[in-house]
Image (cartoon, rainbow, N blue to C red; front, side, top):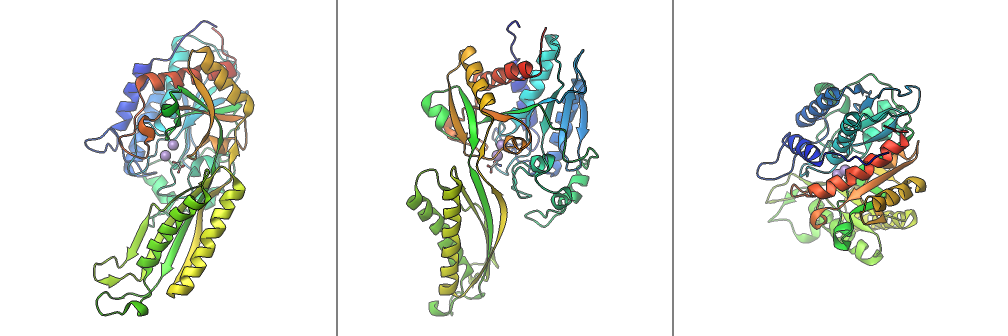
Length: 415
Ligand code: HGY
Ligand code: MN
Ligand code: MN
């Protein structure tokens, strides 16, 4: 099939337009936590683009949106070749995380239509609900329900970090759909995403062929102490939840230093009660994010955190309750697809390397039901979950062209 390429400027302009929804003033980034008003507005914009491309749009019961393109001669009974990602962001979101994968999918459909490519299989472009997990845990919630990994009602009953119910928020943005969960099993699922780390840029590589995703463990710890006067209470009489939260946070860093290798650990959220300058905190609620490429090492990290909490709760006479917010083992992607990414990148003249993903992605859920893999493009300075997140027009075009060739090939495309 002759060489045709995506229109990088058109993709860039859509990324820019989508970034304006929930824009963070003075930055390139956006703040669109899952199922907020801003997320709803972004959904409406992307769905309007799907409809302009004459795609059939379906919304499922957890709010996942699947745009389906049937070209002339497409066999509607064949499973779709699917690409996509997410358009919800963290509060300090960049414009590329997730959005690139969804909008590159639309760009591919538009290019295929313009080039009058006929495909045997339909092509689907999806965005999944609440990939970030920052408002409603776990992360990849929508795609997990899509593949049958999380019961729909349990997901709908999920309570947000601020106490709202997911099903209510889904209705409030108008995306409480009727398409059944689990959803249609695709022929393959291929996701284009920014790396969100420093590897590709530091090695001067254009394309990452992602072969795996590391394991993820999110825990919420609730520490119950006793409020008391900051001035009058002797240090020996304190049951200080704020101090214990600080010690756990320090422990997490010491744990990663001791374990080394791929172990990472983050305390990203700490809320103290009553959170006042002159009161010993009676309560602390905090999150611990542990990740490792090795399941055995991740379990060891989790066990050491439990032991530390048991010891310090005894020593400081506080109670510590823990709740798992997310727990996913490492995932291996489909090796044939990974090889196709490497080969396609080379054929297009790009440098490439195989690698693992430090972040979680919807593709790791789709990998439970069909061959799945990911294409990475570099992140400037390895920065992400930061409004300054940046990937160049040339870099996103390279990734989208690799995606185009593999998607068209998988769909049995011909001109
Ligand atoms: O947390 C993650 O890995 C992703 O950003 N959901
Ligand atoms: Mn993402
Ligand atoms: Mn993210």
